[in-house]
Amino acid sequence: MKIFDVHVHYPWWDAEKATYLDRLRRVCEEIGVTRVALIGRRGQGNDEVEQAFKRYPHFIAGLAHVVLDVDTPQQIREYAQRGFRGLKVILPSRNYDDPAYYPVYQEAAAQRLVILFHTGVVGGRMDDPQRVRLRPYGASSARMHPIFVDTIAMALPALKIIGAHVGYPMYDEACAIARFRPSVFFDISGGETVRRHLLTRDLLGVEIDWTKVLFGSDASSDAARVAAETRAWMAALRDRGVGEEALNRLFYGNAASLFGLE
Image (cartoon, rainbow, N blue to C red):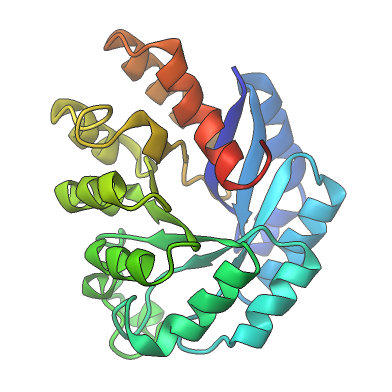
């Protein structure tokens, strides 16, 4: 089975970067991951992801990290011209569906770029004083409620949207949006917590169709997480009797279609 991991972060820390791509490729070859969507970091991090997908064009699809409060449609157009396949957005100072952000979304749709929205609560200590300076004033998990993706999808039906983490923990809302908006998909990244919630509540294949979910590991400097999450999800779904057609859609087919590979 081919696997497409749509949610992998290029590491921020210089010490991790020198060997990262080699480690990532080795792990992916062992587990059967044939393609990853690699997420950059605004500035140098996006440049490094560009170098990565130019080095491995059949393995890496680049997602440029953009800051909705700063970046312009011209910058989105430039990312597309450079060969990025999509964008990653997180922690805006306004709600995702604020009119101020629509020029960016419109340009992304025009350039046929996928946008991976963080949806739901942000993990980690985001109130740490050492990290506050890295974010715009007003940034909050409340700005990334999955319902805002619904507004965007209705206004721009051609825009290809992935909501990360199935909107953790607002799963019911995310599932309903996926049901009614053809251009909206959700990835199942988020580790053991999201996996436990989705499985114990029997959401996958019931509340959200197999055609609307994508595999994501949310791996970063720990490339081994790709393998760990792949194995954990594969085992859990097979234990529940999920068939091969549904597994193929979740692990590869949906993402390949969304990114224009099939």
